[in-house]
Image 1 (tube, rainbow, N blue to C red):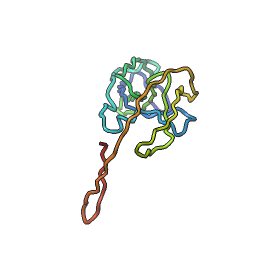
Image 2: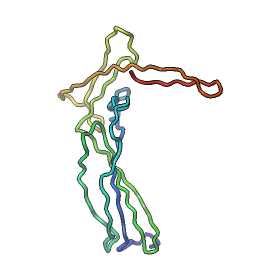
Image 3: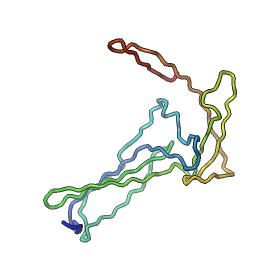
Image 4: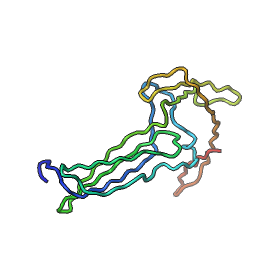
Length: 171
């Protein structure tokens, strides 16, 4: 199998998995395009198993397969990774992987607050836009959203040997 020759009839195995991913369309600095609520402690599964397979490569050293991606309710982009391992007759293995990004819809909603810290009693000002994954602004889309208020409480605690550290939790 030296010099790139096909590994005809060699055994292979594949593993397909998913994980939550981060994505922000290009050309819109300062806008937030992801769901911050889950970051604040609302547990949502962040990865999982999709499928696995085993088989033998064909006479040309290849294999084909397909799997329909049917993710559960997506609250953001998911990355799907296919890992493949081929084992030759001397039981040496070689592996590789490839990932693809699955967008949760045809466009992303971005929000940008005028200020990140707001004084009590002051109104929040923000701009909102709809953007295609490649970054083009879209018009005519109906957008609905929720603005969350999050208060953090920080407590200073005593550590070892006279040191201290902070523990911060959302209220």
